[in-house]
Length: 409
Image (cartoon, rainbow, N blue to C red; front, side, top):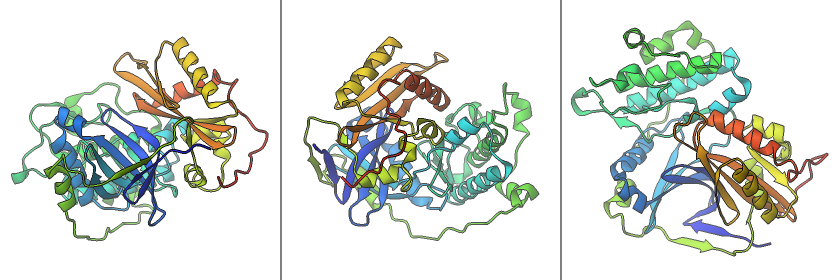
C-alpha cells in the first residue's frame, strides 16, 4: 500500500481535522511520547498579506498565559521558512454545539456541569487579564471524558493599560453582548459573562433566548463571575478547580515572529503519490475514541457523535467521482486534489459561504473511509447537509451486518 507521511520535528503529521479561511488543523502524534496533538498550520504569506502578525502573536501569547484544565492547552509554537505551527492539545469529543444539534436540549445536571467548567475557565482567563470575546457552543470542545475545553482565542484581548474599555466590535451576533455593538466601548469581562449566560440558555432550552434585541433592556441584565458562583443552582455539585501556577516564557513566540523568514523547524515530507492517504491503526483508534469502532460503520451513530464520515468498498476514484457528480447536480462548486474534494456554495440564508471538505482514507485493502468536515458556514446547516448528502450516496456507502475486526496495518 502506498503511504504519504510528513514529519515536523518530533511530530508525525496525519489527516486534516479542521479547515478555515486562514489556517488548517492537522492531527499529529508526538513520536517521543506517543501523545496525540492538533497542529494549527498558518502560511506566513497569508499572515503578512492580511496584516495578521500581531493578531496571531497575541492569540499564541494568550494561550500560553491561560493554562487551565478547562482550556485547550498550547504545547509549543514552531516555524519553518514558510509556515507557523501552533501545537495544541488534541480534544477528541467534538463541539458542545453538536450535542445540542442532536438532542435539542441537554439534561439540567449535564448543563450545570458544563456551565461550571465554562465559568471556571472564563474566571481564570479574567484573572490573567484575558477576555475571550467569542464564547459560543462551537468554541467549546469536549474531551474523551466529556470535560469542557474552551478553544479559539483568535478574537481575545488582554487587559488595557489604565483599565480602558475595549472598542473592537467582534464575536458572533447571537452570543455577543449588546454594548459590544455600540460605539462607546465595553468591559471585556462583562461581555464574556453575557455570552456565558446565552450559552447556558441555549444548552438548557435548545434555542436562542433573543429573537430581537432590545438594547435598553439588555444593558441592565448583568451579573459578575462571583455572583454566578454564589448562586444556589450553580453551587449544586460544584467542584472548584485550582490551576497550577506555572512560570510562562514567551521567548519562543517572539522567536517565531521576530524573524518571520528564518527556518526554525525542518519539514521532512515523505510522499508516495498514486493513492489516498492510509489511516494507520493508531489514528483509527484515536478517531474512534477507544477500541469501539462501531461509529465508523454506523452512519446514524456517526451523525450523533459528530463523526461525520462513512465507509465504502468502492474504489477511491469511484468514490470521488460519485461525490463530484452529486455535488455538481446540487449546484455546488467542486475542487478535487489528491483524493480530497472541497464543495462550495452559498449558505441557506444566502449570507456568506458554505463549504465542505471530503477526504478519502484507505483503512484496509479495498476498504475506504470518507471523512467529511465543515470548512465554512453554519454548523447546524452543515449537519443537515451531511445527512442529505449521504442519503443520496447510498450506492457507494457500505453497511456491514457486523463490524469487522481491523487488524494492525
